[in-house]
Image (cartoon, rainbow, N blue to C red):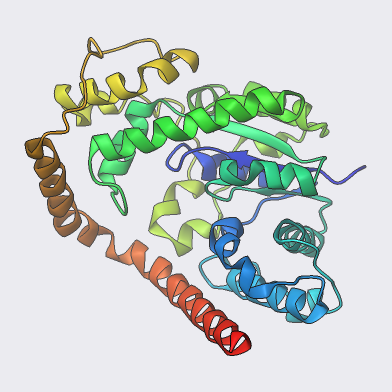
Length: 335
């Protein structure tokens, strides 16, 4: 059977880890924790040029492998795995690493959950024409509520929904371009009728139906490593929706529904709670309020997630050392 190469397109906090775990349960597909290779290396690729120089390509593979094997991702790939490989592009490097991980698990295909995959979809299809896209969308009101509960980077409803809205614009545009290799599913359908939704996904991917894709496993090791992933070892919560009704205030819902109105309708979320008639106020007062809400959230809420941040901070330290070395080498070679 030809190798299946899957790229999930979605905004963060849309249920992507659940989808990844379910896909990973398939006996043919490896879906490891995503190191977000594109986000990390896309703006660094000039430091490895030209990649046709095998030494440069090997350095890119080595750095990407170090990121994949960091305890936060824990791919456990032997360093000699790619020792003899050459690299044509960043996408080729990523493809090689995912294929190596799949081979380590005795699987033939892979799934990438890299955040912002939608930013790199054209590069992916250029290098991997057989790539398939699975677009996962979640009710933006629950999406915002999730961010506000664990606000590691975004801290106000307006910040979150503005990012969500722009990302859905990108994904919907990609759907038009790559329709034949593109499937859209909703998080609410995934949790309410997992069997039907995952059967639909497997059929689209050309995979034989594997019933292991219909449920999570109680012994998921990732759930033990990261507090943010603790639900991955629990049964799927079929009614995990509309939680925003208990957590978001009316003015917050009005902002969310107003900013996202067009895409909400396009994606089938038509049960509006407000008139969706709010308009952004670029006054100094609005900007000050956004700043104050952000400062409060950073001080009070991020502190509660310090344990989850430790792994991210450790990973970031590795990335900083890679960037520093590359820039120093690049500077020396330019002199």
